[in-house]
Image (cartoon, rainbow, N blue to C red):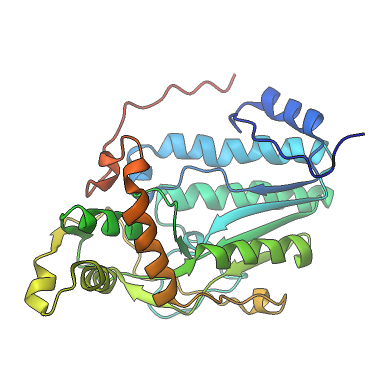
Length: 297
């Protein structure tokens, strides 16, 4: 008899149909939380086809295999960026998708593949769209760990454009609780925004991290640690979301910003050196690699 509590880490590629099909057959998977994706917005402008391949084709492979294996629930983890930017309108789950970069476009297209399995087969899929996540262990290409790591190395925060763009930040454990709630209470065929009212501009974020890490006392001291660089091709101003649908399931974010950012700073102070070949992640813009060969035959 198979141990129902057995855990296993299996390394593989979601874009390989034969591997994925075999994985479902041998591991007897009941529930899928699909996080796998290419995620860096800046890099997506350089490697749009690769993002489409991994995020759209990979999702198609995975949801097809899950359907054929009669999985009990398939949760697709999407992003608030599928809505596009907004200066004042708050997005709910019925708001139209208007992605403005290749990453968000690939996630929106993948959503359509997943949703089609509910519409056609009543396969129990659920889609989530979350705000920016931060916390320990996040790769330093993302804005919060990048700024923290730069400052801890006595380097300046690199801000794209004006820095007036605002983002909503959710601590990692709050997002974990949201996914556990969706697994237990989420209804098949539904979409859930996982958002927070806590919002901060990128400039404000940089200045707060500078004050916390460098113990600055004046505005001029803060400005010394800021370096404004050219903006990305598109940089949405805000992604405000309504999350009442998640609230109705019993979930709300719990970790205050001051507590979450303190834990995050401490983790990078103690663990940044463990990252391998991470310097390229701290550059203002992605250090691109040769485009990978794609063969979907």
